[in-house]
Image (cartoon, rainbow, N blue to C red; front, side, top):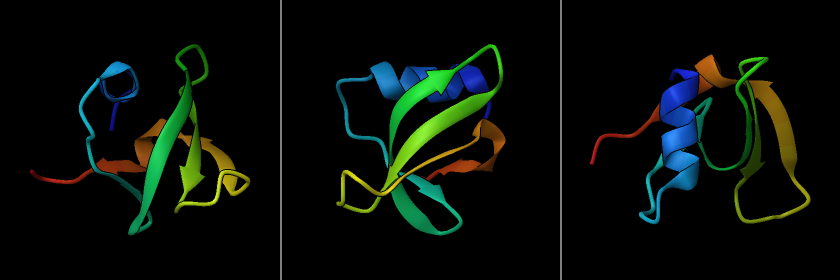
Length: 61
């Protein structure tokens, strides 16, 4: 995924399925300058990771 798409998903009012290494995640922040995103893995708010945006995969609708 590219940074622009990650930002679009983050700002969207729709729920858009995104995965990291096959696990569902929620995008919590996008750092466009560094190409990084902070994501919540699963349903636990404390389980967050900061990763390169290109590791994220948007799931087909």
